[in-house]
Length: 261
Image (cartoon, rainbow, N blue to C red; front, side, top):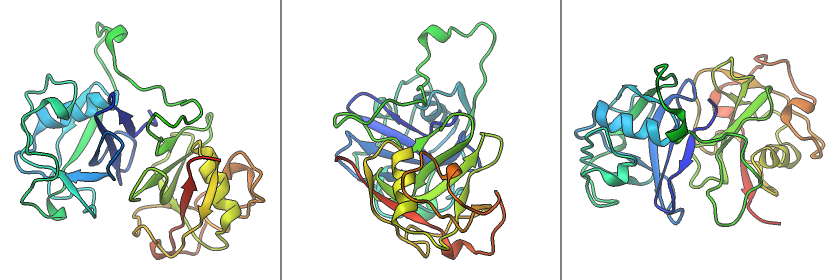
């Protein structure tokens, strides 16, 4: 499953970032699409809380509830603290918790989850809340996806940005590799335009370099990307072989997308 972000009605949205795959990562939440994304403090964080997050994202349940910024500390706001779910809730919004934005934590206490993507044979999929990852064109009244699966080939997502339209670019090939970053060697607005269109945006307004949204970790999957700006995917651009690079994560590329034309 490639979807890392879920819009739950017009209320609490959730996403996972910085995980090694789509089923794990640091938990970030956003209220009613009117706030930037923020993290969840791990005070009291347990498997019941993690299970609610996983089901919000369309997974079956959680297998672990990592704490102490297991997937790296976030930045900016910490939106939830003292979360106490029974595990049966449909959303973190339904759990006992602190008021939105009230906490006594630092980002070294950011909560994470590891989700399970399987279900028992008798699970009734007719009532599942799984999100279809092949999202339609972006409309003004729905949440902007931060992740997109492009056919069976190159997937792209933005992480660590202040909103869904900006962040560090990460790619994954054919859902068979972990997510990795893109080196900024030669990175420009044409390359950023392709990424933004892959995610359903109109175009890019900027192509930040030098890890403007923080340094990633793990693999660097693409380098020397040269797009004309008209391609449908980074896969169609001139670029290094997948995994070949001469970079460090201090050179991670990013984009800032424009929401409307």
